[in-house]
Length: 124
Image (cartoon, rainbow, N blue to C red; front, side):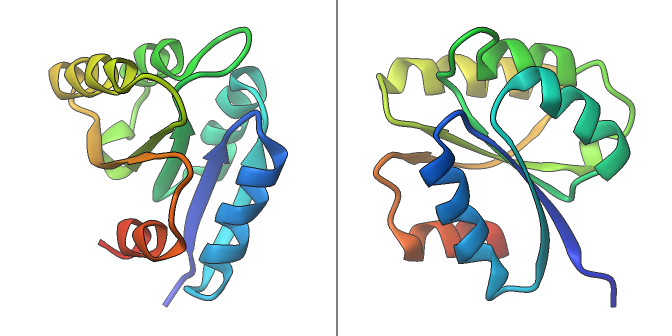
């Protein structure tokens, strides 16, 4: 049984490491990206089963990333967990965009994220 692949895209290094730590007990192979540019390259090589995506990041944000991802082949094989520490309005926009473009949003998490909620989302 192959390990599931998890890609974390978040400009906050601490939070990305928190997700990595939480997922290590569930047997994930984890890759971290701290901006959308590196995530675009990584997603094509790594082909994650789950993508944990921060919505609000400097430069290109998570919503712009989802717009790009919506035209990628194989997007329907990737479950997406959206995370934000900001206004829930961003989350609503991202969810609407995703449902229109066939991206599978599993759940949305508000920072600070509780470990139990994160683990539940990763294993759903």
